[in-house]
Image 1 (tube, rainbow, N blue to C red):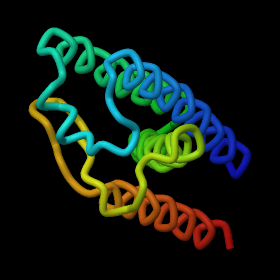
Image 2: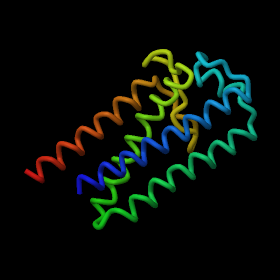
Image 3: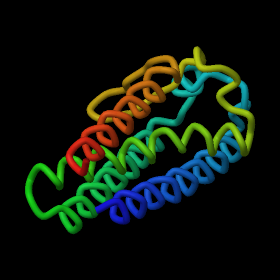
Image 4: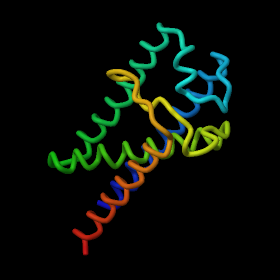
Length: 147
């Protein structure tokens, strides 16, 4: 079971980096300044690209759901696999962006977390905190059931 968790974490990290690279290219192609808040850039984002971004978000969530459905045996395992992989993806997405373009400049930087069903806007520390807590809770639960 530990091997499965490690592989899911690795998948989430790889997916996070891929998405980070895509975001870097999008920001460059659209002329968004690296230190600029994503909230401000959303206001200048062409509306037809918002639709495209939503489809990317749906595809990302679908990939995580399908992976969880494939690796989990029970519904609880499927939910845990989804949350675990999602948390690694979300946490390492921000790490990837920071390593690539030094964004966000600090944890209080405002970001657009999701566009579905409408924009979710919050400081970067919110998803980082939620993802970190999710990883810790799942790891502790798993370790306590193994011991």
